[in-house]
Image (cartoon, rainbow, N blue to C red; front, side, top):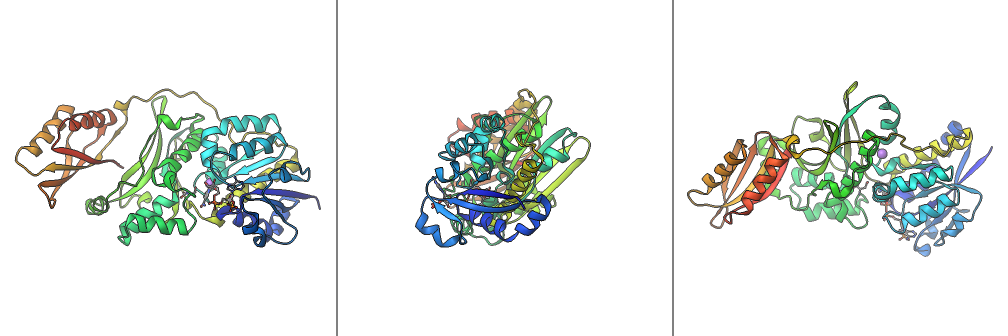
Amino acid sequence: MDEIKIGLVGLGTVGSSVLKMVTENSDKVQNITGRNLSIKTVVVRNVAKHQAEVPAGVTVTDDLNTIVDDPEIKIVVEVMGGVHPAKEVITALLNAKKHVVTANKDLIASAGEELAALAKQNHCDLMYEASVAGGIPILRTIVTSFAADYITEVKGIVNGTTNYILTQMQRKHWSYDQALMKAQELGFAESDPTNDVEGIDAAYKMVILSQFSYGTHIKLSNMAVEGISTIQQADVQQADAFGYTIKLLGIARRIDDGVFAEVGPVLVPQDHPLATINNENNAVMVTGQAVGETLFYGPGAGGLPTANSVLSDIVSVTKNIVLGTTGNSFNNYQSQVGKVDPRDVIYPYYLSLKMLDAPGEMLKFTQIMTQIGASFSQIVQTKNDDQTARVVIITHEMSKAQLSDLKTSLSQINTISLLAAYKVL
Ligand SMILES: NC(=O)C1=CN([C@@H]2O[C@H](COP(=O)(O)OP(=O)(O)OC[C@H]3O[C@@H](n4cnc5c(N)ncnc54)[C@H](OP(=O)(O)O)[C@@H]3O)[C@@H](O)[C@H]2O)C=CC1
Ligand SMILES: N[C@@H](CC=O)C(=O)O
Ligand code: NA
């Protein structure tokens, strides 16, 4: 039987699981593709650390050229992470006519179009199912099963680390730091978890999801992105008392002929499916004009779930090699979209305010709300230890433009500060 040799760049959480799956599940893959797949060479930084982790016959090296110059290696999996030198690595591999499978959302969100063009030029495949929502097969599902439907919204929990942290803060009342440390220990977090907790990892995934859903590239710099590092335990408990769970959501929604995309903490009603997604699990809700609402749920991080997505790409590439159909883009949809007016982006908001606990302060706030034409449905005031009070409000629907006016007006009052403004689903 014909053999297809694979190169692996990175042998951490995901890489070691890819090695395990290729080694242990080869019979089924062979049955499906008619090809015997095996890992020939692994590239890492620290060869001594990894030498004992690979089966006999697999080469471990710190020299990428061992793969680039090996004509026997047809497919290479990049799971080293980060934009540089991963971009240079994938560029060299594609120029050497290797098909590439990657889990690297940082790189695909920032240079995906350029790399896809390079792949096409070299008649190579470039696939990245694992880059969005780890083990959930969401990208290929959008490409194939939503090909004819008009997607109006894609939203969800697309970062495992932050969902794990929020779950532990809400259910076990763990501190933020304690929960983050455990997420790192479990291999969910990036090597530097800043992108996880600041919402940037989720934003990368929304960029890729938007590309697949709307055929358009949304620049990260045009997206409002907020993480979870400033969420207070008090907000988690207060949201719970109001009947909501705080989740870090990515939302990309068609509004008229534009697409609005944002990442931030959102209060999700406790009976909404997204409120029930816990720990490192992710869920992506895709709404199509024909199909209506669909929900895809599964592990968003972790070695084996992510490796399963990598393997699904390897199998797709192998089928293309067998059929002689390599060199087609993972996502072919391209479309022009317009700008969204902030007056058309409308949600209720959860506002957490700190104000001087003195007569007239609340009146100042309600006057501003009246001036901007906004109103609220729920309000709770608690006294702080000092001369201030914590006031938490759920507003009626208001636009992003009104929220922006509210922030501007509040910034001019030194006795009231806005601690948090989260959308309410
Ligand atoms: N962990 C997860 O749950 C998920 C991760 N991903 C993505 O998968 C990718 C890998 O993540 P993960 O496995 O967690 O990362 P790890 O940090 O666990 O592993 C990274 C691996 O890459 C190697 N590496 C890093 N830099 C270089 C370099 N310059 N040259 C050669 N080798 C290098 C490291 O080698 P050494 O050990 O010698 O330093 C290590 O083996 C990332 O893009 C991540 O975003 C996607 C979905 C889920
Ligand atoms: N760090 C990421 C890993 C998967 O993409 C996450 O926590 O979701
Ligand atoms: Na996926």
